[in-house]
Length: 96
Image (tube, rainbow, N blue to C red; front, top):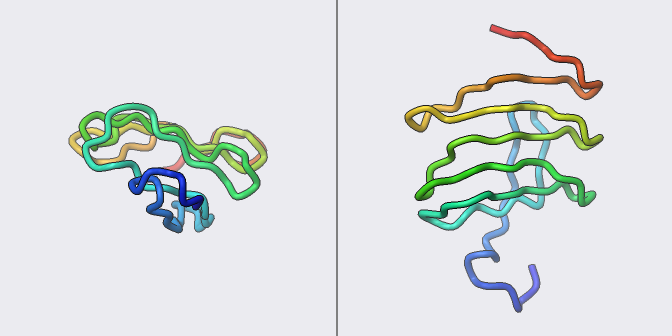
């Protein structure tokens, strides 16, 4: 990360997603962050958008690298709930 960025933004991390995809431009949100946080694929395409309140995730959405929606999710009492999952072709996948 460039040296001119604030220290909290220099906490670069690698993250493996639920399907094993490595997101190598993931930057952890600051502690107690409130707002919208975005992650990107190395290609520059959007990977995820997550809404946080006081450091806790509330809702989010992820995309396949081809731009199609992957997961729509929310958190209830800090537990992740997947609302929908779509394969890379955009088809809704139902799972138990």
